[in-house]
Amino acid sequence: MATVSEQLRFHGIHPSRQRVAIGEYVLQTEEHPSAERVLEEARKQLPSVSQATVYNTLNLFVEKGLLKALQLEPGHTVFDPHVGPHHHFIDDDSGHIHDIPWTAVNVQGTEDLADFEIDEVQIIFRGRRKAPTSATEKRLD
Amino acid sequence: MATVSEQLRFHGIHPSRQRVAIGEYVLQTEEHPSAERVLEEARKQLPSVSQATVYNTLNLFVEKGLLKALQLEPGHTVFDPHVGPHHHFIDDDSGHIHDIPWTAVNVQGTEDLADFEIDEVQIIFRGRRKAPTSATEKRLD
DNA sequence: ATCGGTGCAAATTATTTGCATGAAT
DNA sequence: ATTCATGCAAATAATTTGCACCGAT
Image (cartoon, rainbow over all chains, first blue to last red; front, top):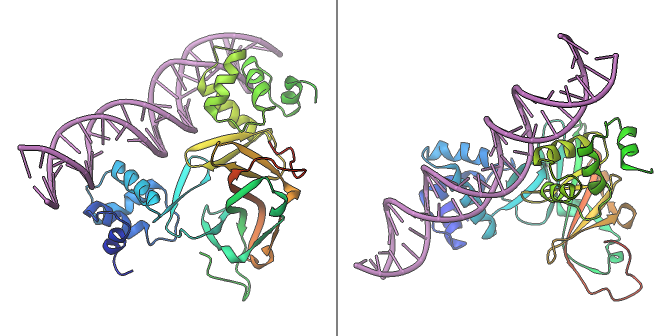
């Protein structure tokens, strides 16, 4: 996928200037930004863009499958362009959110939830990041 | 624990009329209510109570360990008096939230997250409830 | 009368709505 | 010129703050 414009068009979204400015940040970031943070970054490209447009665009991207909205902390919705299944680790010291690969963990026992048809499983780990000590360090930032 | 008043006092909270009215609902419900829903129920006991007091009281209860705040769906904080570790299943048809006992499932592979000190693990399952069919039916409402 | 605790009106923050403008035919 | 899409100001919803009041000393 070469450009953000192409990516938008491919998902049936007209690539207006505002959407491209927003997408160039939010579709490529690893930082799990809030709507407010997205506005701040989008304005570096297009200073006139409004917060309302940012919200509407983020909602559009979510609807079209380009983003996921995550509600991990009270009153603080964040967006994640990594739309495939994965989990999250929240560092309670720094507030940073790290993606945990889907394959890193395995949930046992779901067969006991026989009365439920499970469409999605999402694990939220909370804690703190230790000083990276060894070869176990992986790119989970 | 006999009365809500006693429960509040035990946790170092002065049992004012407002707090008791709020607590009598929110500390005993299984329905994972929003702040708005708590106001509605509290007003059945004490019609003059304000939404601000409900928010402040819910925050106080969370702080004192009587409630947990859960961010399960974007823009919708709910409260749960079941403060021990457990998981949640969200029925996307009805919107109902079911508690899943901590012991019902097991997460494998956390040893690979060696650089993180894990304080809390919380699994959110989403899907739909099937018609209860058999002896596997358990009280998970 | 003083002081810490309490409740709520008002303020703030987060998000959505509805309409004015612009692009496409 | 009509229609549909787009962006944003204004409206609404969610939550927090700060101060007036009350009860205990």
